[in-house]
Image (tube, rainbow, N blue to C red):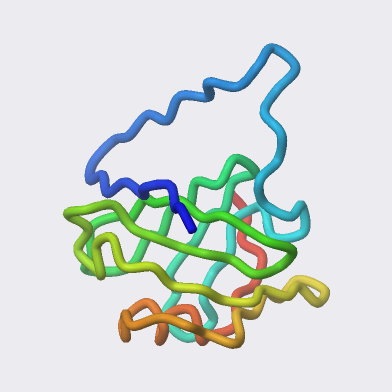
Length: 126
């Protein structure tokens, strides 16, 4: 199985959309696209339709990476050099009920990400 890299950036970041003029095909299920705030930690996670994931946490540089999906099964990976588990793959089954996102059935050797993903996430405005 091949995975796309994730990126770690601190400070300002620019992400280029290199899709066709008609727009890129969504890689992420529509119901999980958006900003989510962790109810336990206050972390903010944004999932884009093109598979970019950005995680902002207190006292940790912003994490930027990639996610891919098969159905609602997500594979996450942070860029080499990330403050948390660089290049380690984590897999979760995501579900949305109302305004709450949950991640279950983890297969992830990264204890920090596993703990973070184990909380409930609520929709967060931009």
